[in-house]
Length: 344
Ligand SMILES: NC(=O)c1ccc[n+]([C@@H]2O[C@H](COP(=O)([O-])OP(=O)(O)OC[C@H]3O[C@@H](n4cnc5c(N)ncnc54)[C@H](OP(=O)(O)O)[C@@H]3O)[C@@H](O)[C@H]2O)c1
Figure 1 (cartoon, rainbow, N blue to C red):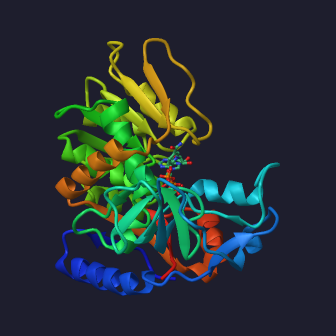
Figure 2 (figure 1 turned 135 degrees about the horizontal axis):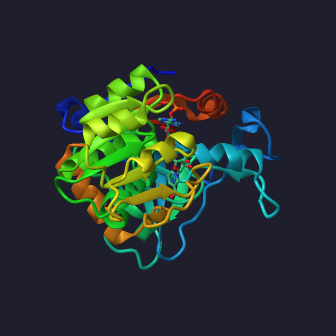
Figure 3 (figure 1 turned 45 degrees about the vertical axis):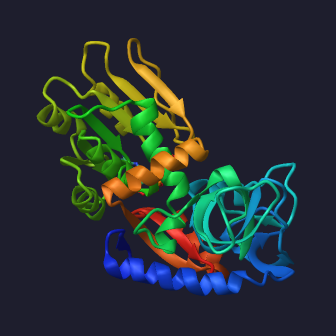
């Protein structure tokens, strides 16, 4: 396991590494094998149910691309899907809702992608050497982002940007509390908010987390477990904050919402999956949302990533064969950014 690193998208060395990885993966992608390795499980349970399986390489249907996966994101909901795969699960189950790699084949009717393109996107089954994904849920890797960072960019990036632009409609000069800012979504949300000219008060639970979000651009920080959120918010925005982005649930989120401006114009966005969800409040616009994946959404994400010269914090990196250890690490918490599985 590597220690947490920041991948600076603008760094020349990262570009060079990405190109090197892309070209070697392109060569591999030209011959698609019949079978592949995937980290999968045959029944629900703890992290140790995950092990390498040899499975058939999927074939892209019309409108799909086949991706030779370089890296896959390990998401917080992967743990609950692993623990409780549900009645309708088809075993072996391959997890992984986002990742990055090289296009290895394209299905009928796909435009805009060709074999050898470096792409990232959302779908199902990225914990594998190959995955198929709908072409509209895939995009070219933005300039300067290496394939490792791209592997954890799609879901967190869309969730962060859409929260700020589409749900909260943040404007330059407005104030925003990002609660739960040191995780996968929050570290990107801080940077997108700053790109839009928004002033940010960020919460995290550890000194390392607070230092990270400060480094990523937060104007002010407060510990969401041991700090005085009300006092920090008053000092940050004496008239009350314009908005709250909720990336973690609980009492601390309620304290953030308490800090909204009192003139009925405060707004809250919180992601589906946080627990507990915030209690409804009179005269506060509160929106539960999930990320949307699509051509327009990825265009906007790529523009924002390049404009922000986005840094994508990798909390830890594990080889595909160590997916179980990756899940154990996730269970221990306090991740700075998101875990990536290295597939190639
Ligand atoms: N529906 C969707 O479209 C969608 C998409 C993406 C994410 N989500 C959900 O959105 C949430 C955030 O996702 P994520 O990937 O960013 O998860 P994450 O990496 O676990 O981030 C959550 C962060 O909140 C922090 N936190 C928890 N309690 C806190 C407190 N009292 N004060 C300050 N920080 C606190 C955690 O810090 P510690 O680890 O140090 O406690 C962690 O860094 C998750 O619930 C996820 O399931 C939903």
